[in-house]
Length: 353
Image (cartoon, one colour):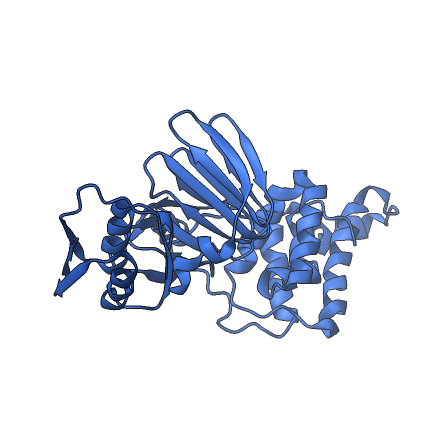
């Protein structure tokens, strides 16, 4: 690969343009490694990427490689300025293209290269759709946020502007900007959610919870903050880093970080995806649950009000799995096992021992 030293080099590199406009796993991997090996070029890389994203055109196919080489030759000639032979006085006094080009500022040269690239590729129509007052508009979009909430008995699936998918469990909320910044993608979560993050090696995805920040580039994981003072981050695929004010902890697939906010400590353990993600698949599960825990889970899962009668002294360690079942079906099954009567009326259920 040719040396990439400035914005101009990025804009005239066919594979970089193709990665920005039509990314795939192979290109993602390559440019991610290049970015890590050349951190000093990250500002130029980001600016070039943003300029290409602001234009509506398809990256040139291989036959246009010659056109890219012509543009790069123009740039190389500029660098040879100190080595060119002395021309006759008449020729030196004549202001040519080289004199004009070197007289432009860097940003003007970048704009000229981008425009020339599009013209030479035969794509000059209404393709440079730079938005009117785009900077002010983007700042406004980034400043405004969207809040999505679920109540008891509700679940929600949504797709963010970058392609990231979120499954929001009941009694949860997620807040995110209408448009992510060019530096990072940051959201806030209360409750529980499962994420499938769209990979973007230049913009890490951050999930902020109470006292913890989970940072990823592209992966799938579950975060549960429902228990007061407790946060569980379960990594399904990829890699994440969970950070607090005291520590930074990487996770590998199959690992769950269990964080205790009361003392700022955490443990890492292996988890069963079938159990952790059961809620996402519509499966209600209990594992050695007490009666109050069963009651709370039923109320949240079905959005119902559960009343207990004659329950003093009743001790439960209840386990069971209920895939895609109604409240009546669940209570009917439980009543056979635990020996109680029940009655359902609308959103209210009475369990009598």
